[in-house]
Image (cartoon, rainbow, N blue to C red; front, side, top):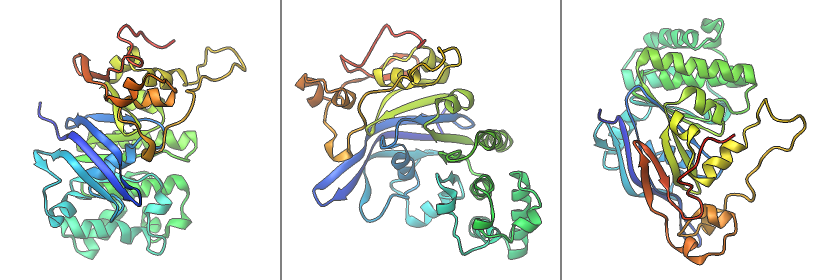
Length: 331
């Protein structure tokens, strides 16, 4: 089956006073139509930057995609015109941004922000777009949508603002939905409702989803494949069941071990990964998880590890220190 989205060797950099720094360093993965791929990793690992590279929403003028291919339905988005990119962005690829209060325009009513998308991509008249906006608000579970369409963002709760973002993202029935931390800062009940909403809309529209999250529970429940990013690189990726059952990279195992367990002894200390992700200006050329763990074998920090397929669809960065070929499920 051909992929809806295929990322090959993507390099995204930012220009700083001290030169170019790589936030995303040669990553590759693909998403098939109708499937959900989870992108997971700590803050600062490049998840959002890699996603914004797809739709050309990097901070300008500093952010640039320097290398690689972004193939969407066979078309390299790096080579398209600005006009074509505007058609793709919002029309064929929808986006749920991480913070809806920052993404929504505070001085425009909700209805206007939804109808703008419909007028631009679908060519609807004002009346048609308004009627469709009410339908979309109803579809995403907002009560009294005919009234809420005239509300401002600050008049809605966090969960309702997130639902508005989903309505905008799905207005043109996109082929791919990029959901960047769609449940951040929401309470557990609302989180579950938002994830169920995305899943139901995915089934209805047959779209693919790129789910960016810190929550491995979300990945396990909602995704078909998982991509684990660390310090701008993919250290492991594969089918969800396979990767959760047989994690082979030390970072992946650390993430899985840090999940609180119901069967753990009461008041026991939670497992954590020592250290923190280095700043992008400090990334080494070699294994960046070894850099975090202060391993002083210089060859590990100078030479980038090979990226190997260890079973069908299961890839791992094979650093001699971090790769555990006989790894078993994390207990």
